[in-house]
Length: 468
Image (cartoon, rainbow, N blue to C red; front, side, top):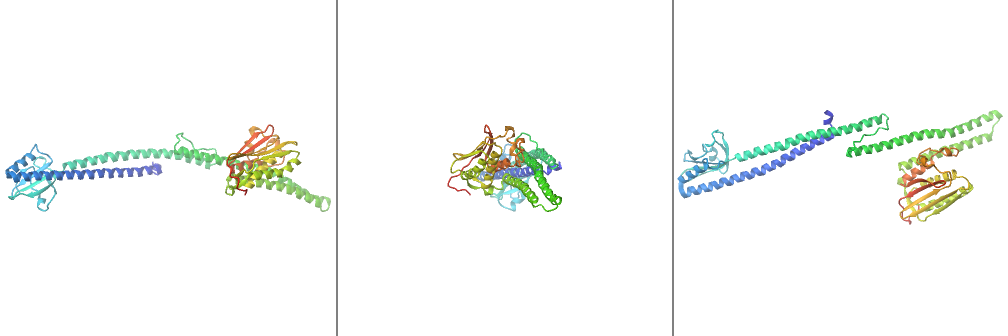
């Protein structure tokens, strides 16, 4: 229960109940104030009408007729709320339903509210009377008023209405707030329990859903999506660490072996062997270059996946970039005994990062050359369709099986057929990261034979902008 009182939902419910109670009190108080004023005005008007009528009776027909009228109106058949008292010069009662003359009548003029006993009330309890007193000719005194029992009854009715309106609402609201607080506390506890398991290392833990689709379910869905992303990143980090350690062990071992062999040869031959040193350094430089390329590819992939290069995206002439790549790779492809053709549409301008896109396309062309036999054909096509453009690199090499096309986009993944060729398994990972950075759809298809890689650019700019 103590934890329930500490929940924000329960506190909000209490605040709402406080505002609700205050609002009901103000509304009913305003109604009471308006109605009580109306009743008081009606009372004053009634008393004034009685005074005028009695004054006319006394003026026209004298004291006897006045006493008869007072007896009639204050008797059993009279109006029960009206009160009268006619006294002589010494204030001795002569007619009416009051027991004595109000003492306050001689102290103040105008309207009075006094407590007086009534002859027609056997209990003898004083009643609150609102009326006026005045002196008649001949020294007689007349007090005409009205019992405020209606106002008292109305006050009791309003107090009861306020109690029945506010107290049940507060009670039901308190119970509802407690139930809502317990429900929210249970959902928060589920999130907390899942978070504690995750903190202890269970990254497969997820926040449970109730299927209601409420805000807690939407929050849990977002959290679970975030956890899946974190688990994927952590798994990728472990894969990168393991693969990096495995792939760098071989070049480092070869470099270390070459250096040790060069250091032993001078002692074995009895003199310096400059040629052995040179060969050892050349081999070491080759291995270090491979390591540097691996690290550079990893850095580019990390930056592209994190979107760090998005701030440097600008207008890029994709037509000119692909044409430059075709010219650069033409002699490389011919030297490998293959053929490279390019079909490039003009004035295809996109928002992109020139260096990363050039590196990604170069990786695709390198793979096409590396995994295609002599006599193969490589085709690079850039086509524009309305506001979109597609860039396709197709070869007639060994291709990639359908089951492995998603897997080869991960870091350090190399198929068994490519183990004999140089590489680190990061080329297609960089292509996928660059495609994600540019919001480009990347697909790997069968070229029958070979592989066809397609980059679909959804937005093409106006051609007058030059490349960055």
